[in-house]
Length: 415
Ligand code: AMP
Ligand code: GLY
Image (cartoon, helix red, strand yellow):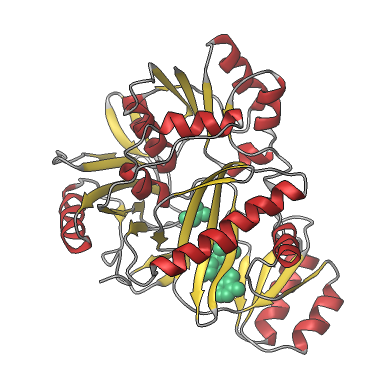
């Protein structure tokens, strides 16, 4: 089987790595990929949203399966276009991607089908929104309705902050012309639950936890994620079962009932509140950096589930390792703000059982260079989190590069 992976981050490197373990895979392409995917796949210089270019490439090269990483490609309709051309592709249609690309769509769906989430109101008019927030309690959470690269969420502590955020979103249109969802502030540990979903068939993956803030102690600005691990001691089997039935399966079945059956990964950004597990957000794709710690635990052949979902037929029962896994992101100094690129990296020798996923790298004259905000993510599996964490930080410290920083407290909520 020849497989094409779309995207260029650590998530895509982890998908390429999982595919490389399959005896059924004879060749892997990654578009556009990074230096790391280039070691295991053939990188193809096409943008992830170049739907026509990617479709032509898949047809010309007899690609048997395409796997989509980023939401931008899904929202651009890549799945619809590939299917219309008779190509097999793993990912949601443009219509189903609304579960991520529109917060209001997701909130309405959850309301209608009784999926637990924070109470909300949505607005397009600034004055109306202002009137509502001035009469409510704080903190309140304000979310821009469309895709905002993780930057469209403001937790307002008081009316003044809410007013500023509303003005930015509804008067200045900082993110575009979308509406604003205002929702209740929830408290509790957050975790990520990813499932492969094909209509009403839902295949759960191990739970993971991301670390969104840039610095130790969960301080600093929000990022794409600075590290992740599996094996969350604060989520019980009952919590997971509840989240599986009442959130993930219920949402899959709701999307099918609405005429937008899912056919890819449903990512639940969940929170364990005093009042039970609730949805903070849904994504229509693999999480990054969660995928980098979750996929190394998959013992089944990943092509079996990708193909079953893409073909809309029953798939295999997935086998997952009992081990836990932890990964630490090394990011360019300055990230998530402005940062420089092009610093040389020297990689350490990896011991058995470890992976080093590349997130934002390129090569020039045989040298490995930084090429993005998040650059590298060493990942270690182990029988217990303490041991895996010690080993992963040993590797982190051996990475040679003068312009990287990392958090030293990944998995602190578990330890
Ligand atoms: P989102 O992009 O929707 O995941 O929001 C980004 C971050 O904002 C989440 O990871 C949470 O930490 C926080 N957040 C979003 N919604 C809420 C909420 N209703 N209550 C508390 N925190 C929230
Ligand atoms: N790790 C958060 C995300 O993928 O959106």
